[in-house]
Length: 466
Image (cartoon, rainbow, N blue to C red):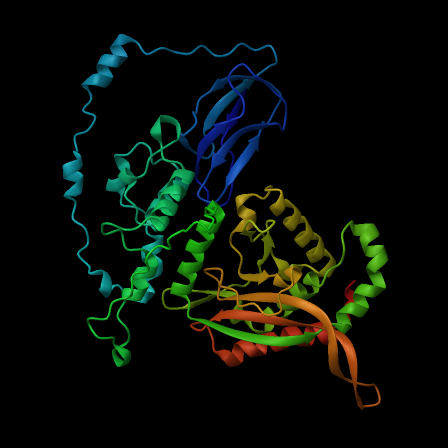
């Protein structure tokens, strides 16, 4: 007999909700075969069986939320008998019946005072705290359906009333899909009554600075839902699209975005790639692209301009003394994941190329752990692989900058010749475009960072590192 416990699914994950069992009591289980699915506030993950044998007992049912380390099942030898199912006795039923189940009525919960702060008086700087605030305990404690950490977070972020959401999970529990479906329904249906004020509306309603105070009667316009005609097709927003949209709206509300671009001549990088092209693919099993070179140059530039590798706190800039580079990965046009290369400042070009390739492959096959897609300090979005020539990305909170690597194409450029003269030559050229948080630094600092990346790419002896 061996206990199956809920594993540690991330450094910050303390509990998870069992969303699905792939086996039932009495089934034979192979080692490393998917045993159950668990939902955390980060991702949904299939967990493999730690051993082979027979599933003799399931202690955590679908929909139950359990802490990390809790025993959720028991696996015995191949010929083990299932554990007997205990039936509650009459005495237990009497004891349960005698316990006051609901001493606090719904009416009493409704009387809990709510902070009497007018929406229009919420400052823009406080929006992040409003968006991140969890649902009040009073609204969750009495609802047995709201057990999943991700459900709690979504309900709190979107300021939803749990009673308005139909639960389709075990025992009527509300699942993540239920919440997202409810959000989609709100977004696509006409409003006939006042609805909760979303974060974006709070930003629009926040008072402008005194010098540019809008008239008191000025109200942000209400955008009516688009009516669909016979020539239109309704395409339901996917869950990842809904979540991405929510995060991007929040980022634009929090950070005053600014934008800077440099043009890079990649002829120097091309010479190094051409010299190892054949042997690299044979030895490593994948092609050597421009992205590892750009990532390596970003790491070196962050050492010179450390305020790019930072997060904005309440009233300070938290500069990180390590570099965790997030690299956005496209999931076949269905959304993005941003796996993280940890301690990138300690790795050279070949190690970075290997790790980016591994993370991208596992992102596309949904095999990343929660820790691998959180906690980055700087993000690179590789839009050039899709053909984009100039992209203004949105900052990945709580970071202060995100770099877009746009398409590299052969174009005429002016080059300096060894004898000091100039000539027009054909070189591979592309843009590096960066969105950055104007609270953290100014344009000259951002430009200096980009110019440093350009200088490293155009002048470094990459063959020595390869």
